[in-house]
Amino acid sequence: MSNKEIVGYALSTNAQLIAEMAESDYTTVILCFVVSDEAGNLSPSTELQAMFNAPDLISNLKKAGKRVLISIGGEVFTTAAWAALANNLDNTVQQLTKMVTDHGLDGVDIDWEDTNYSGYDAPTFLVDLSKALKSKLPEDQNFVTHAPQAPYFYGGSGYLQVYVDVAKNAGDAVDLYNIQYYNNQWYVGETAEEETGKVAGTELVDGSTFPSSIIGIASTGVPISKLILGKPTTLQNVVGSAAVNGYMPADEIVDNLITPLLAKEPDFAGVMGWQYPTQYGSDTGTDEWAATMAKALGN
Image (cartoon, rainbow, N blue to C red; front, side, top):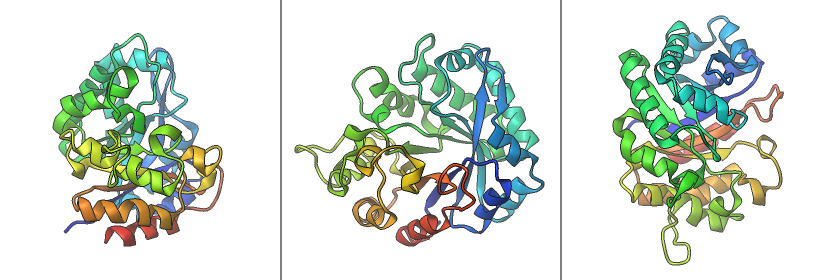
């Protein structure tokens, strides 16, 4: 059986630190971020440019067996920027394709967090972007992932429905969903016990499977082999108290989320960690977190 995914988001100007991920248990490294102005012109962030400038960083990660992607978006990405990208999809895809091929990457992660979107149809855009990237990128460089916040899979209307629609309509164009189970208190839970229901979905919540849990999403027909459970790697990588931001120590993630999920759904895809390093600006990685996840997942 192949290894489960351990996805790590890399956000640092310290390229030497990111290079250390080659020796870690992370299976996929996502370099952050591709940013956009409000006319839809894409460029690397300061952190991403530092990684692009580092000799052999990407090639050495790949030689170590890591999949290496770039992520577009993030929480500071504006509605106007997303709208510009959506309203000129061909140009968006062309720019991303050039960045991937120029730097020898394996694909693109889409970190859409435009909850109050306007000026474009978000679900349609995210589906069309995924399909276009899958089609236009070279076959060995067209791995496409998304990083939705948990509420986007809850279902109903507005932003709560966005990724229900994306998963339904994008099909094979999306390879993994790196779901952010943090920073959304009600949808994630405040204790390990609550998270067993609201994140893993292996326990019922008020008599039902919680819709945006891993089990809940899978019950709608999304292959569980595409569902990644995302958590902060350290308390310093999110804002506020653990009860609010969804942080759990690694051993609690294992005991309350991974172990029951694997027992119920052996094909569950794996985990994602936000982020590498231990906090922004740190010169310390999160290799220990990844090693704990690898052991729990049987890698």
